[in-house]
Length: 323
Ligand code: FAD
Image (cartoon, rainbow, N blue to C red; front, side, top):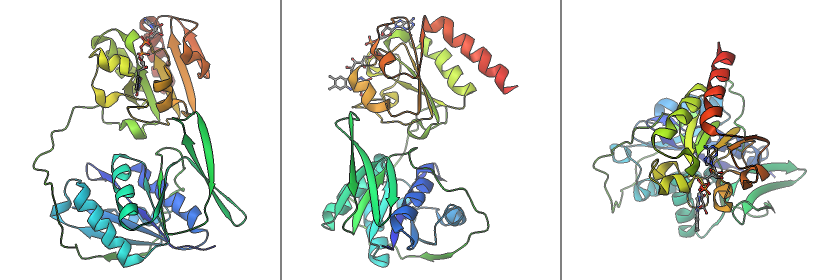
C-alpha cells in the first residue's frame, strides 16, 4: 500500500548525520512506492537539501531559524510538529539517537499516535512491511507487521543501509514558516569535549577497552588502533567507573547501543550489561587474557593474550595494509 512518509533528518556540527540517509532508505521501504518527504529543522539546513534528493528523498521541507542553532526538545519538537501538520504524512521516521529517542515519543504521545522504536531491519514481503526490533536488551528480537498509520518509527543507526547516492536526482524544496516557539530552555553555550572526531554511535569500527586496560594511559594504544582503522574508542562501564575514560564512551545497557561493522573488545569480560550495547555488531573480535571470559561467547574471532602485546602488533599490521 503506497504511503506518504516523512523522514526527519538530524545534524551534528552543521553536517548531516549518516542516520538521516538511513532514515530516507527506511522511509522508501515503508512508503512502498509512495512519496518520501525529508524534513529538516535547524539554523542552516537548506544547503543540505540536494544530498537528501541524492539519497532517495522526493521532496524536502525545512524550517530554518537562529532559535534552532542548538537542539532543544521544545524547539525541535514544535518545528517537527509544524512540518507534520504541513505534510500530514502517514508515517514519520527518524534515527534512534539521543534526539530521536526524545522527540519521537513526545510527538507520538502528543498526537495520540503509536511509536515503534529501535528498528534494526525492515523487510517488504508482498503486501506486508515487517519491522524487526531487539527486546530484553538485545537477547531476543520481535517482528512487527505494519497494520496502521500514522505511526512514528525510530531506526537504530548503522543497521539499515542508505541507498547508493544518485547525483542526478532532484526535487522540490519548500521552506515552512517557523511556528511561534514556546521554549522552556535556551542553550547559551555548548562546551564540546575533545574527541577523535568519529561519532561513537555511527562509527563503522569501534575499539573498546575494559578494566583490563588498567589506566587512562592504557587507552592510548586503543586510540591509535582506532585512528588507523578510521574508528572510534568505546569502553565498558568497568573502565569508566575506574576513571580510565569518560562516561560518554560507555557502551551497554546503561550506555550507548552500537552496531559497527567491526567491534574490537580489549580487556573487557563481556558482562551481560555490556553485551546489551554491542552484541549486534557485525564482526566482534575479543582480546582477553582469560580464555574463559564471557566475551569469547559472542566473539567471531578471539585472541587469548595480553592486550598490551597484541594491540601494537595489530597497529603495525593495519598500517602495512594501508600502505
Ligand atoms: P571486568 O569484568 O573486570 O573485566 C576485565 C577483563 O579484562 C577480564 O576479563 C580480564 O581477564 C581482562 N584483562 C585484564 N588484563 C588484561 C590484559 N592485560 N590483556 C587482556 N585482557 C585483560 N557495564 C557495561 O560495560 N556497560 C553498561 O552499560 C553497564 N550497565 C550496567 C547496568 C547495571 C544495572 C549493572 C548492575 C551493571 C552494569 N554494567 C555495565 C557493569 C557490568 O555488570 C560489568 O561490571 C562491567 O561491564 C565490567 O567491566 P569490564 O568488563 O571492563 O571489567
